Image (cartoon, rainbow, N blue to C red; front, side, top):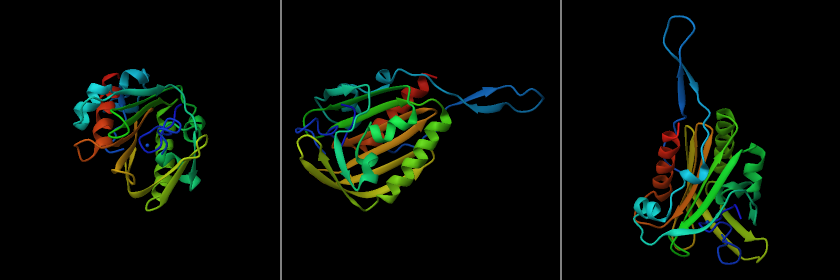
Length: 230
């Protein structure tokens, strides 16, 4: 599986159905201009091991103020295990979906679900896109889609079990290279962050914990790791 809805990655079939922000700064490189003058700044395309960027259970606990978290499921490809209503809001509630990521031409992907049980879960994904421009275009397109879903109730129905869950998108904020949504529904609110760091996409949905912005806390640590790899 490679998707996630309401902190449950498509709810891991019948059990998990239904489960970004820091300000994103594109990585830049510095090259010397051919003629006298200041250096010319150019966006640098990065190559990372997505699995090496993700946080394990201990690191998620440290970021969210939880205890006992562990990797519950993982994968390296997108999927599409739920039907979403309205369908245009699929990417807001679902991480690593075929619908959103196959058109990007991504060259590498890894997603992990990390948590204790059916609560306080983190779904995190790192995808490497072919270029900085493609990553920025992806964020821009998703930001417009997410904003159009603000205030709407989204229902996700598992394609196999037919179990359905719903949440309401309370708020969507957009900033350069990133978009964040607050989802209300179920036992606790969840935060979803989508961010580009150079050509690397970070997609994080987090619920629970003791921090006020759990997905933001996770995404900031992922972004630091991406930058350290440059």
